[in-house]
Image (cartoon, rainbow over all chains, first blue to last red; front, side, top):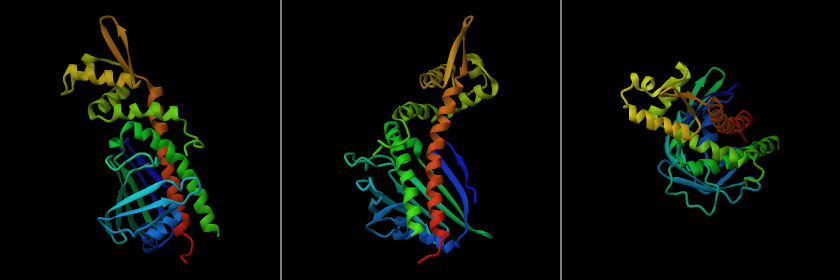
Length: 155
Length: 117
């Protein structure tokens, strides 16, 4: 199924249809273990509204990268939102005082399965120098991750 | 960890000020106006605007510093026009971030469209 995109400098929005029931997609997104499996991160805490889940990336070469996912809202099988520091990849930098981006997942049942909309917004507030390095890091990171998941699902 | 990245440091360094320059409603409006109406003088660009001529002038300088617009002197007036090559760079930057999400969704798809253990 194709993914459609709309974007501004502040926001990226993606919509696609997954051939899976809404409950299945919901678990893959909100169960920290399942999220970690496809995302490539080992999380230490479950996802809970108002709490942060922290963890380390499990991707080879990226194990030093910590994630801090602050859960904003969970409306079962409909809406899941968290904030993070989009590319907080330098262990020597304290990102905690910097602005976060908001990542939102919206689910809707459709005849073929589940329509998923992913929105990441707040890029305009990310400092220019950080966007710079963030962008660099993330591009490499996500490329590695797709290989990882391919390995995971083909076992 | 960025060593193996296909993204060149210089690309993003150049792109960052671009987004700062576009992150303002008046400036974005000016860019859109130049895109739709072609080159214009400050007088022309501030004619239907609620923003003062001086403010428009300042905004154009910001856009110019980011390489988004350029001006040429025509008689006594300065005429402003888009520098389209910079706009396509902005596009490229967003497209790359966008591809990152495509990959993430691809991995999620592979995950949920297979049997759950």
